[in-house]
Image 1 (cartoon, rainbow, N blue to C red):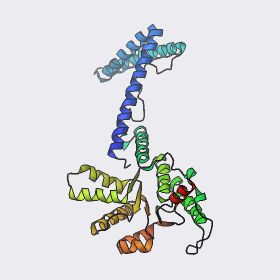
Image 2: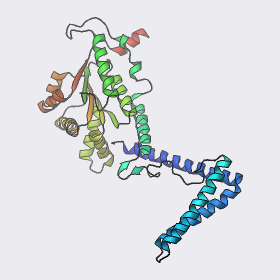
Image 3: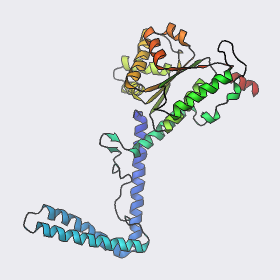
Image 4: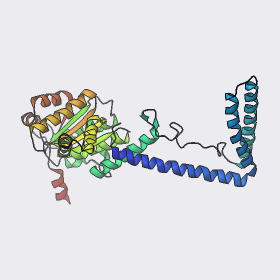
Length: 331
């Protein structure tokens, strides 16, 4: 998954701390066992000595190799039985003296071959949510907190429905998109309308739910995204910019906020087309929010981009009174 390098680094540091604490706990348990059951210390010592003997016997050449190996195994099993019975009598778990890893799946390496283990991936997910929280104030932005009562029930002739009816439809689609991420019929959403109508709020709600589901999510404004593309192109030694661009292109969900607020140029148009087209080709999902409707998109950007958006995105309109002004008036 396309987690940021910083998130992975923090997750690895947390994992190292967890492993260190686990080892300290195991060592404390060993000391407790030996204090309460002195005989367990001797049995543990003998077991640790028989293991190298078994290995040496397996490697030794000679006619008696099999017999010696069988005898050592019997000795080892007998010691294990004695120790298990002693631990049980003392009320300790059977593996109290074993050097068990915190994660048996990866043996505390964090990786299983070339794939990240679930133990490290869970920490990366938590760090990703923390990153998103710093950008989006995820403490308040949830689908449950979305207020439909700010949207008028009076029908708007241009849309042939009321803002309230429309937002019920939009909210339902955004929530289903997030909760059914990966299986929702539409892979991409385009949220458009005037400022102050809830586009960023619902984008944040989507980010929260999808990230909590264990998927890699990148949220950024269009201005910041294009700035990182420029840094990648004009500062070839800017490794951080290159890493950011790779995340934009490869994360499972990219949320691009406020498209159209950036300064328009041929470079910006090319960068936007690269983002949209690359992610579509890879089957990755994208949510874009903008103050621009489709006619304005066609005018501002290229016909090729407009065609890709129209063919591959579900367009969800936002209309009504500015919620921020309504809140201010009610306050």
